[in-house]
Every structure is written in C-alpha cells, then in structure tokens.
Image (cartoon, rainbow, N blue to C red; front, top):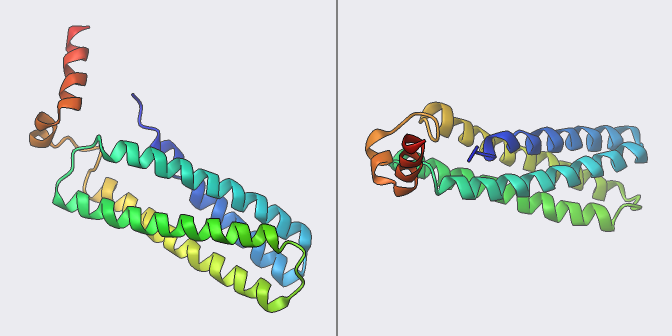
Length: 161
C-alpha cells in the first residue's frame, strides 16, 4: 500500500499558516471578511491535521524504527498533537465568538494562533528530521526489516508474482 502520510502532511502547515496570516491581516485592517476566510482555512487545516495524525499513527507502526527514530516519533507526535488540540480549541473559540468586537480578545486569539503555528512547525521539523536525517520510512534498515513480519509478507508476495 502506498503511504498516505507523506502526501497529507503538507496540508496542515500550509492551511494553518495561511489562516494565521489572514487572521493577522484581518485584525490589523479590521476586516471581518479576511477573518472569516481565515476561519475556513483554520477549519480545513484542522481537518488536515486530523487526517495527518491518523495516517501517521498507522504508518508509524509499519516502519522500521531504531531508538533514535522512536524518540523523534514520540516528540513529533507530542508537538503535533499539542498543536492540533490547540487549533481545535481556538476553532471552537472562533466559532462561538465570531461577532465579538472586543479588541483584546481578538489580539489574544491571534497571538495564541500564531504561537500554535510555531508548535506545528517544530513538529513538522521533527518529522522532516525523522525522514531526511534518520531515514525513517525511506532508507532500508535491513536488520530491522528482516524482523518485521509485515514487510517480509510484502516481500514474499511480490516474489511470487
């Protein structure tokens, strides 16, 4: 099966950083339309985060891991989950307080949103380090691949065809 996680992981940062930019510009210009568009990017980015988490959990169980990769996987999951929960809570806040005109509330929302993009960005960096630095899911780790029955079954099936 083709790994879905690498195809999905780019959507959350792009959508949520775009939402942050729209929220910031909407706040500065006092433009409710930009804030509304930011909310839709926010919602789409949150859905993309959820899809990336599910595909990441599925594929993390199927890649060969050494101690270094496992530690990075754990940190990657922590930061991405933290950001996703935060974006979810801010999504509820944004939905419930759409018509709020309280300036400090809007500033606080935008500051928290931008801070969460930092957590998401660090989680994404860890994911990239896992793949490009440690070779997770990319570089064959022969000893660990031999011990993984799932991969052996795939190799046996392809040899028969």
